[in-house]
Image (cartoon, helix red, strand yellow):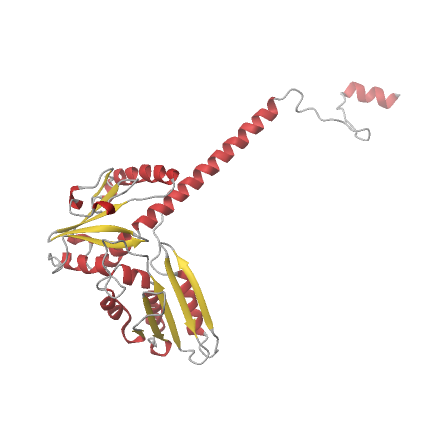
Amino acid sequence: MILLQSHSRFLLQTLLNRVQNLELAVELDYHWVEFNDVRYHMLVSMKNPNIVLLSVSLPTPPPEVVFMSGLPFGAVEAIKAAYGVAVQILDPPRDGFNLTLKLNLAKLPPNEEHRYALLVKIASVREVVLGAPLRVVLKHLVSRTIVPAADQVLALVHRPKESFFLVSQPDKVTVVFPMRFKDSIDTAFATSFLQEFVEARHAAGLNNAPPCLWSPTPPLELKEAPAEALSANAGFVSFVIFPRHVEGKKLDRTVWNLSTFHAYVSYHVKCSEGFMHTRMRRRVESLIQALDRAKPGGEEKKKSPSSRSFKRLSLKEARANSIS
């Protein structure tokens, strides 16, 4: 199985090209969309080739998710902590976007390794912004506390008008994903995949992984969640996160894996569907070949007037032909 990368490959490559060619005054105006409907706009003018304006539009939040000034809570603090003086938040952002960052390439670290690490972090702006509330909650889990003034059931956006839920306790955080798919075939594949996903958790090599549960109905942890947010045609997946899962460097990986879990499932559902289609096509082709071989006289070749045929002669026949 594949795990999605946290950074935007297109954004990272564009930033690297821009840094390597600062002496060239080139105007850039790029628009693109990545998974889960995150839109980007990158703008560089010829007058200020060292300044990059990066705007980000996040998925539309459902009613149960609350944004603060167009961003998830904790996003501003997460951006400042991740990017330092090289990045400035513009207020207000450009029209049609939730966030606009002003990147000064002249303030990047002189060390090549540190500069590349910062560019990768900038290319991971989706993780930094959308994962900010989850990161805040899991940081409190490390110290075995609960976020002050936070709801017992916290809804976070991860897809357009769709949310997942956090239920915080001092010693654990339960993360619940209502799994929704538009296509009935995807729903069937996803339901089977998720049940196998839960069973795989019991393997000997995954003893330290977070406990995982699947249920066709909402778990008891969501009894206080709004009813309209609990519609799921592929069931509900729950992960129980303990402090050992977010200690040290594990925190970043846990935040990203949870933030992109639905995209991870969707990717493997589409791969499974494509694999099944390939197997079906191969099976049909083999059946057609078997039918062709079963036709009477199907292997006999029609001879044209100019075609020649050859017959292997025995030694006696060869000698008789040579004497005659």
